[in-house]
Image (cartoon, rainbow, N blue to C red; front, side, top):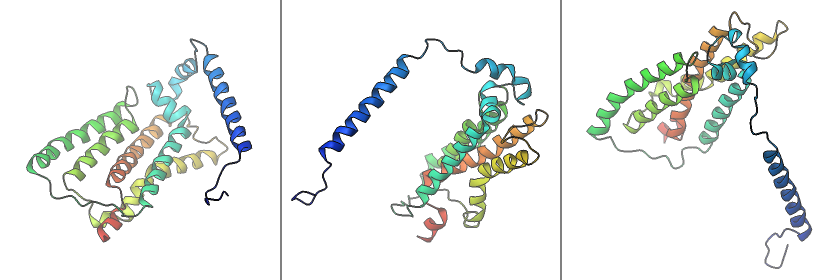
Length: 229
């Protein structure tokens, strides 16, 4: 500590950090420059096993079958982000005034359309671009529009029902994964006969959890605490 009372970093530690950062930068540059111009990747294997994946869209097969644990962790990250926002409490919560007639009419027109588009993206994900995250984002946009129009969740749904909906995606993934491991299987390795139904189940619950999580993130506080404030 110097005479001003501020902490200083020793020169030797600064030099060490500079060397480590330089080595890391050189290694990353070498790794990027050494990549082949055209790499086949794993697309060949993804297409070869598409018949037992339960879907006909290779992207959905990768995200919900071959690497279902990746999607499972992504849902967990989204839930943790929401819990982090809620941990800040209701500081900075803003209660907006009632919306004007234009926003109210727009929400009444667009929300049903967004719900229909979300349902289409959910169903189409098995054989075309779409899926849970796209459908959940569109459904979440409908929720944000409702919040902007002055809508708030009913007090009876702001407690346990809301929390069940938020963890539904992660809970179903974990439950199915545990069931598949019990008879000597692997984590989230779906039997081909049930793969299609399990993927549809995962995408449905994930869509709801993603949409509600995104809407709750926009709200910025636990509805229970917001009502109490």
